[in-house]
Length: 372
Ligand SMILES: *Cc1c(COP(=O)(O)O)cnc(C)c1O
Image 1 (tube, helix red, strand yellow):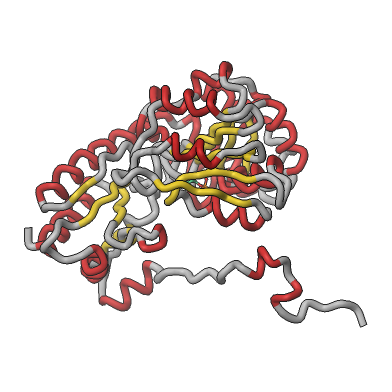
Image 2 (spheres, helix red, strand yellow; image 1 turned 30 degrees about the vertical axis):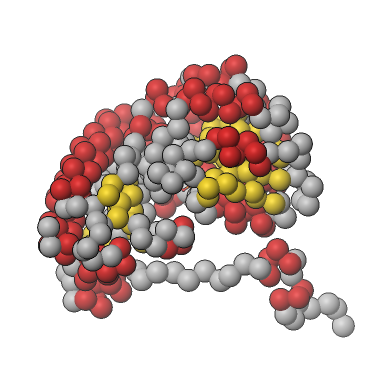
C-alpha cells in the first residue's frame, strides 16, 4: 500500500503546531443576531471610501481577459511602481499581498534551524506565523510601555545568525511612527548580513518624510514593504510589493510562484496607482478622522495613543466600562471595532477611521456607552 497521511504526526511538527483558523462573525451574521439594518466595520484598517470608481471600471473592463495568464514578471506594474517610488525597477518585486513578500523573505533569507529573525512584541501576526512555517526562530523584544520602539532591545536579540529584523512604521496596532534617523541608525548598527525590513503598509497616512525610501541608496541592507490593501482600497485583491536590494529582488522573482498576482489585480493596481485624486481624498479623510476621533475619545475619558496611521489604539478610562464591554456594546449598535486580545492587549481596542458620518456615529455611541 502506498503511504497515506493518517494523522497530524504525518505533517511537519511546525505544521502540526498551527491552530485552525476560526473566522469571526460576518457582517450579515451580526446584522441578523442583533436585528440591525446597517453594520459599520471599523475593525480591519480598510479604506472607508471603498473601491475607487475608476478602478471598479477597469476591473469590469478587464474581466474579458481573465482567461489569460498574467504576463510573467508583471513588467507593467513593476515599471509603474518604480516610477511612482522613484527607484530602479530592479528593486521591485510584487506579490499576493505584502504577506507573500514576508513569507518569501523568511524562505529566501533564513536557513531553517540555523538563522533567526527579530521583531518587536506585539507585532503583525504574519511575521510569527510565516517564521514558524519556515522553521525559523523569531525572537521578540517588548515595545516600550508607551508602545514606542526600543531599538536597543531589538539589537540585543541580534547575533551572527540573525538575517531579518522587522520594524513596522507606522506600527500596528499602536499607530506610532519610528523616526527615520533612528531607523537609519538601526540599519547601520545591524551586521551587514542582517536585512532591516521596514513594513510601511500605512506609510501614506504618515507622509513621505517618515519613509526610508529616499535613503535606500546609502543603506544596502534595508528593504521596504508596501501594500495596495490600505490607501489604495484593494485589500480583497491581494497586492503588495517590496522595494528590495536588487540582488534580493532578483532571487525573489526566481522563486516566487509564477502567477501569484492575478491579471485583474494587476490591472486594478495600475489604475489605482494612477488615481492620485482618490488617494489624496483617502489621506485627507483619514487625517481629518484621526484628529476628530483622537480629540473626541480623549474628551470621553479614554487614553488614546498618538497615531500616524488610519486607525487609533485606545482604552476606556478607569471607572467606566472596560474594553471588552465597550466592544460588545458597540457590536449591538452595529459597529465592529477590533479587540486587541489576540495581541495580548485585552484592555486595549483599535478602531479604523471610517467616513465622517461613521466616525461621528462611533463616537456618539462610545460616549453613550461610557456615560461621558
Ligand atoms: C495590513 C498590513 C499589511 C498588508 O498586508 P497585505 O498582505 O498586503 O494585505 C502588512 N503589514 C502590516 C503591519 C499590516 O497591518
